[in-house]
Length: 289
Image (cartoon, rainbow, N blue to C red):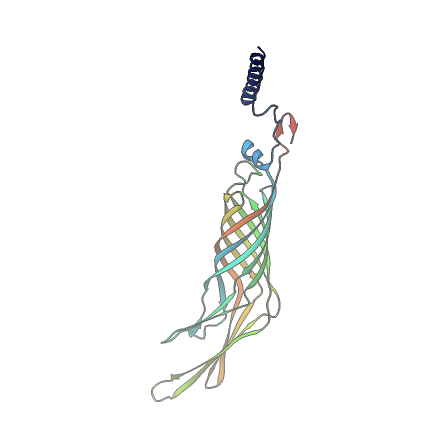
């Protein structure tokens, strides 16, 4: 009788343990609610879509084609001339945008101002002189508003800028040219001589600018800009003086001046390294965020 009672006790204990294991197996994984998950910036953007931008900072680089217009005072009766060159240049900028409506940008450009000397004849010659290639620009821009303000999206911007061109004051090139010209049958030959002396200004010069730009929002932190800028120079950064002599007697003088007036056409790529969002208009669970 005693062994049967012992077997019964062991069986009862086993069944109780099995029941406890089954209860644990079917028990819910989370015994209590986790509570409301707090929102962060990304989750708010996903939930509410377009959120107003208070301000943002960016830095970027640009590449562009620059044209600058030269002015020549005398062509020596068609012997010489000039032209406006088109060359590639680049720049680097940092900027601040306020409520996606106004922007201030500081830019350094590695871009030359040129003088071009053309000498016509049987074998035409072309010489291009340039200044120190440095300029600093402070630019203000205004967005053309179409639709909701303070929302970051692709848009047109208009701008105006002032800038300075540091100049070294150094001499660039001194060139001499000589040739001969027959006066006529039986009248002898004239010896022709021309010199070209190019100098960079010793004083800082300036410029003003008007610009139009279309900025494309590529990603949350990347913008692509397509721009056109018209610049007017304030003072000559580079000057070329020319002297023309016949039989060692000076007959004419001329000057080519470059002040940087011209056009820039290019593209810029910008990285947005800080965005300040304005969440004040949004409500969550009856309260302000």
